Structures are given as C-alpha cells and as structure tokens.
Length: 277
Image (cartoon, rainbow, N blue to C red; front, side, top):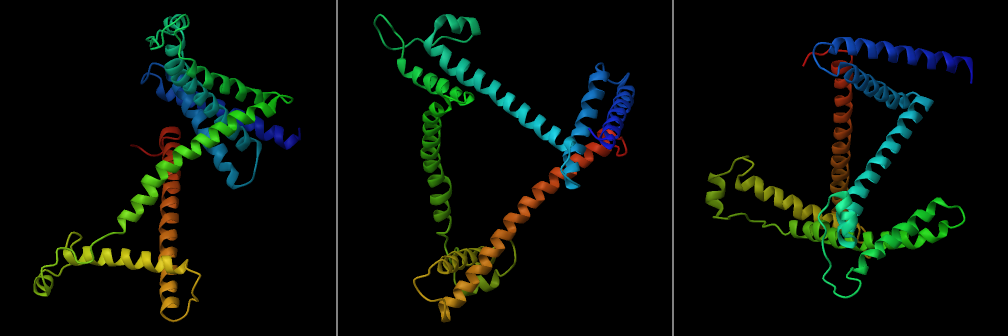
C-alpha cells in the first residue's frame, strides 16, 4: 500500500471518529440512543461522499460504498424471499410441524390418501435447489434449467402485462375526438379562451396527438420515399420524436437532480447542521 493511500485512509478514519463524537455530543440529551444516532448519521454522510467521489475518479472509497450497497441489497432481498416465499407460501402447504415452528397457519391439502400433500409445490423447491448449483464450478450448468424457467416465465407474464398497460393502452389513448363537444362555429368563437379545460385547448391537444402519431408513424414507414408531402410529414414526425425523447430525458434528469438535492440537504442539514429545518 502506498504512503499517500495510508495518509488518506488515516485522515478519513480520524474525520469519521471526530464526526461521530461531534454528532453524538449534539444528540446527547435530545435522544436516548445518541451514540447510535450519531454513528448512523456519520456513516450515511461518509457513504454519500464516497459515492460522490466517483465524479473525480474511481477510488477505493467508491468501491467500498458500491460493494456495501450491493451486499446489503442482496441480503435484504434474500431475507425477504425467505420469509415471504418459503415461510409465507411454501411451508404452510407442505408441513404442519414446520408451520408450527415458524408460527404460520398451516394450509391443509385437498388431496386425500396416505400422503395428503400437494406435490406440485415441491417443483419450485427442486428448481430452487438446482439454482443453488450456480455456486459450484463443476455443477453450475445444472442451474441453467432454473434460469431458463425463470426467464421464460418472466417474459411470458410481462408480455401480457406490457400488452395491456403499454401497447393497447397507448393505442386507445390516440383515439381522441377531434371536435370536442362541437356546438357550432358561433359557440366556439364566443367561448374561445386558453383555459386548460376549454374546448379550444382540448381540441388543440387532440389534434397535436393525432398529427404527432400519424407523422411519427410515417417517419418509420420506409416503403415510400420521404419526398413531398410524405417528406414534410416525416420531418414533423422527427420533431415530435425529438420533443418526446427530450421530455423523457428531462424528466429523468429532474429525478436525478431531486436525488442530489436530497443528499445535499442531508449533508448540510443533518450532518453539518448548516441548514436549519
């Protein structure tokens, strides 16, 4: 380990200890668990700074925060899967004694005979055990059966959901009336205003949707050369697509900026105490 690395690591440890002591002292008399509270605020601040340090360069502090986040997330979802899937769904259907051990209500099977157990529930158990073979270097190929089942099932289920929520829903949203509550040109002129619920604005929005969808589809129609009226409609379709992509990108940037503002507020308020809430 280089000398500069040792100096930086020592400085970080000293700053962490000083911050922990300062925050614990600040919470003393305010909260009962002031030592734990001071540690949690300090470790949260240092992990935030470790992640933000990636903006300068890749470094060991960022890798530590990244690996810690991945490890905690994997452990959390493993615990959630164990208690919700195995304990919550599997054990109550295969064993009354195990159900009593985990204190979950036993669900008796409808099958009668010497072995009144629904053997269908043992199929996911077998697939789960096969999936654990991924940890073995020699038997890892066995886990491909479970992975293939998971990928195929997920793709099939999501296909139906996407067809309903995205494909069909978006198509039905384009079927909009171009003449909203049309009561004649006289009423339209007399009621002309820019109210968002007004007839003019609603009709304008519907026309924009209609022309945008048609021109966007024309841009992807390559069986006819994009010249003349088709070319002008195709260029308008490009503008519609660019505005849509720009709005989506702006929405994503706004979400990231909101996260950044939240972390900066935490650093300057909860950690440093420079902002009073």
